[in-house]
Length: 346
Image 1 (cartoon, one colour):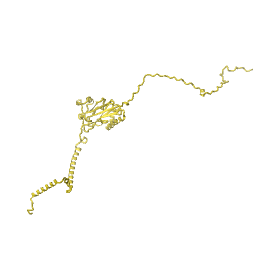
Image 2: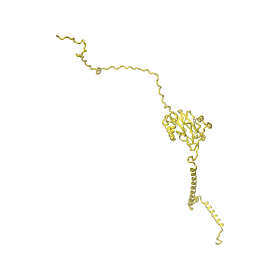
Image 3: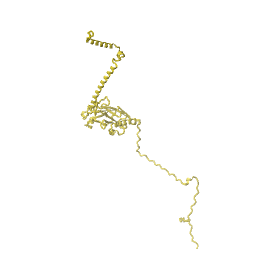
């Protein structure tokens, strides 16, 4: 090859670098519309259709493989490492709920069956879902067949919600009780202890104070497998005052169940009960019976005169009866009327 045609290798690098700089300068000088869509070059955002297809396929395959790898290890973790009979995500302590309404206010007229029957039906439906003969179990709280709502002995049911895997830590001795427990809980612990139990207390915070009775008792059976009626305590308010609003608060006591007064259902539940009585519906009491003796007045009725047959014929005069003839055969004739006997002639 002639020497005048040969070019040193270094010049090729300079030419290539010069062309690259020209290409960058040309792209930089392009208007923004050409950068988005260049109809002459058939490019969208600087890439042709084939270039876009290749890069989309590349990232689809990449992320699909990543998803499959992550799903494989999650499946191994869920099926082989975690016990299927235990919760996969640990939750906090169980909360509280209340029946019949699970609201903060219960108000009704005791003489209106249209208000009492829905409350009783709601309680029956709740207890039937427990599948543990709960209606018979809480029968002592249902003496009037309306759960006490027509006899001023209403019952509410406080339920400790279920959390799988929750193991309660109970107060088993009086020395373990915290200082803020209400009065009387130490006596309850001494009466129903020392078996592990989650204790429940209810007290009046405003209004008249009715008698509070618990069924089966002021406690929940502490067990990891609490089911059915073990999670429910019936609270009966005896001698509820009429037309007075009474505020109650019920709390559960266990070491690992904190009580938060700001949130309903977290260790405590508050509710208001108002038994309405329409005074106009009250009837006057029946008059008392007079026990004094009443004098007896005897009335003498004169007998009616005997009516003869002759008087029933009106004013017609009847002929007199013919005289009675003497019977010659009658031997009982009067001697004054008898003829003298004479002897026959000889």
